[in-house]
Image 1 (cartoon, rainbow, N blue to C red):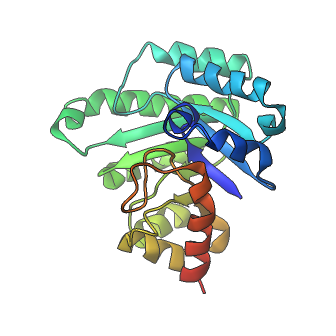
Image 2 (image 1 turned 120 degrees about the horizontal axis):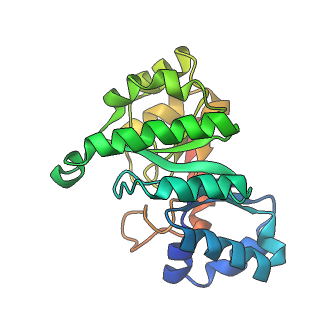
Length: 232
C-alpha cells in the first residue's frame, strides 16, 4: 500500500492510535508532506522513535501556495543540501478563494522557482492545484524538466490529465476518499487513466469520508478497494 500524501503531525494529533498502523502495516509506505521545518523535524523524530516505521515514511517539503513565504526557499535548499527530503511539495497554485487569488503572482513566482530547484536536484514534485488547472498548462515546460510530477488529490478532468501525459509530463495522479464520496471527476479519471499513472493517498487528516470528522492513514485500504471496484 502506498500513501502518496499525508500530513503526519496533524494526522497523529487527530488520531494518535494511527502510530501503531505505521509500525504494523505490511508492504506500506507513505510520503509525509511538510510545510515548515518543525513538521520535517517531527517526522524525523517519529522515525527515530519508531524504527519499525522508519523505512516506510519518506518526507516532502515545499512552500504551499496558501502560505507563499519567499524566505522559505532557503529552508528548501538547505533541506535538499542536507539530503533530508525525498520530494519537493506540496507546491502549486490555488485560486479557490479571493484571499488566495490576491497572492497569485507570488504563488506563481515561488511555484516556478521550486520547479526549477526540483529539476536541478533530480527530485519529484508534489502538486497542490485547486481551481488552477488551466494556468498550469502554461508551465508544462517546467513540469517536463522534473523527474516526475504527483498531482496530489487530483480534481481535474480526465481530458486534462491525458493532455499533460500526451505533452510529455511524467505525471501521476493521486486519489483519496473523494472516490468513496462519489466525486465524478475522480471516478472518471480512475476509470480511464492508465493503471500505472494512478496513485493512492489519504491526505490525512484533511480528506475525510462523508460522515467522518477527519481522514486516517488506515483509510488507504478503502481507497484501494474503491479503485479496484471502479476498474472492475
